[in-house]
Amino acid sequence: MLPKIEPLRGALVSDWKTCGKAVCRCARGERHGPYWSLRWREDGRQRRTYVCSGDVDTVRAAVAAWRDQHPPARSARDLIADLRRLMRTLEV
Image (cartoon, rainbow, N blue to C red; front, side, top):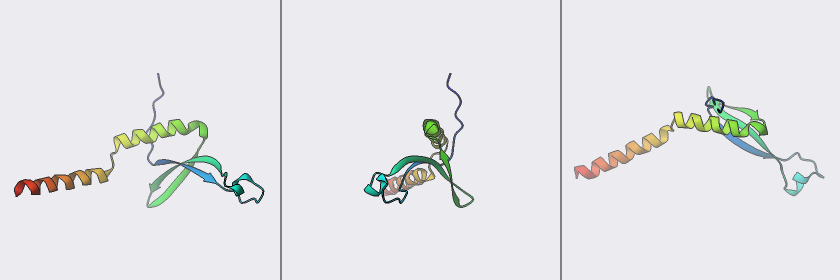
């Protein structure tokens, strides 16, 4: 049986970094990473916490579970706008 995954709000983001050392491989364009982080908004500010590479799949599943439970409001607004357009065409 799989462990229960608590839904997580936010987005899982991968970052590639440069260290700035002249002799490093990142000076040639081969950046370091990926470094994974979970980012979300809280009290009007963006928050971030780093995610270990071993936990990426679990966090990805938790973010997907959150999105399943909380569909974006934008798509609902788009559907309402489409319905209004259809209603106008039916009235004519």
